[in-house]
Image (cartoon, rainbow, N blue to C red; front, top):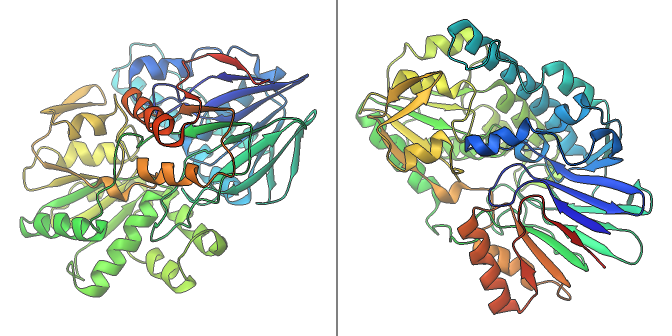
Length: 453
C-alpha cells in the first residue's frame, strides 16, 4: 500500500490523497487549491496520475477544497465511482454545478471587461462538467462497510464538521488507514461531535487550527456586538460566508439574537447566496446529523430575506444601512460577495465581518491583516470599513479538541500524517502529538509518496 499527498500539504486547500493497493488506485478527497496564485496554478497542472487510471474517489465532505476538483477530474477522463455520504451527495448537487457556473461567469466577466492576461479567459471547468460528475456518485450510509476497488473497502463515521462530513477508514485486509477529513467541534451548538477514531494502522489528520485555541466566549455575543455597533452607525455588516455550514450557523445565531432582543428585530438581514438557501433546506432532511430540532431548522430558514436574482443582488448594493448581508464566499475568493465589497468596503460606517479561518493568499486573509485596498475584478478597492473576525464560529476543531479526539484512540497508529494546515499550524500539532501522546508523526511534503507496510 502506498500513499501520495497531492494536496493539503503546507496549506488548508486542495485536499487530495492517492492511495494505491495492489492494482487499485483511489483518491481520498478531490479538492480545489485556493488562496495564493502559486497554489491556484496547481489546479491547472496535470495530476501525477491520469484520471482515467483512478478507480474510485472517496469524499470526506462537500466543501470545495475537498470536492471542487471532481468536475475537472471527470472532464479529464475519470469514469470511476465517487463514494460519499448521502448528505455529502446532496450538498455536492448544489455546490459543484454552482462552482462550474461561477467559473464560467468569472471567465465571461474577465473577457467582457478585458482584465485577464489570457485571450480568451477560459473556466477551469463548466457547469456541464459538474453535472457529468454528479452522475458518478454512489452514496453510502454511515457505519456500513462499502466496497471501493480491488481489495479496498471502507466505513464512514460522523465528523461533525458540516452535514455529511465523514471520518473515513479504509482497509485492504491486513492494513487500515483513517482519514479524519475536517473534524468538527466537540461542543458545537449545531453539529454533533466527531465520532471516536476507529483502530487504524495509519492516520491522516487535519491541522487547520493546530496552533490555535478557540475563544471560549459565546460567538453569539461577539456577533451581536458587531452587528449592533454597525447598525448604530447606520452601516452595513457584510459577512462573507461559506454557503455550507457557516451560513447556517450565522442564520441560527441571528434568529436567536433577534428572538432574545440582542439585535433589533426589525434589522434587515439578507442571504445573498442561492446555494446557501438550498443547503439550509437540507438540515431538515438530515436531522440525525446535527443538534437542531425541526422547529429550529424552520426558524433558521426564515431568519433572512432571500436574494435570488442577479438583479436583486445588484439592487442591494444601492441600498444603505443599517442592514446585514450574508454572501458567499467565506474567504472573499469569488461569488456575489465581491460585488458587495466593491460597493461597501470604502465606507467607514460599514463592517466586513469574517466568520472563521482565512487561508493565506485570500482577500479575506489580506483584509484581516489590515491591507488598505483589495484587488477585485482587475481594480483596487479601498478598504475603509471596519474589519472584524470571529474565529470561534469556525466549524473546525482547535488544537485541544484535536488532541482530545486523538487521545481517545484505542491504540496509537504506526504513523500519523499531519495535513490540511498552514506550515506553523501543522508543525505545532506535530510537536504536541509527539510530546503529549508519544506517537510517531510527520508533516508530509507536496507530492511526497510513502510506503504503508
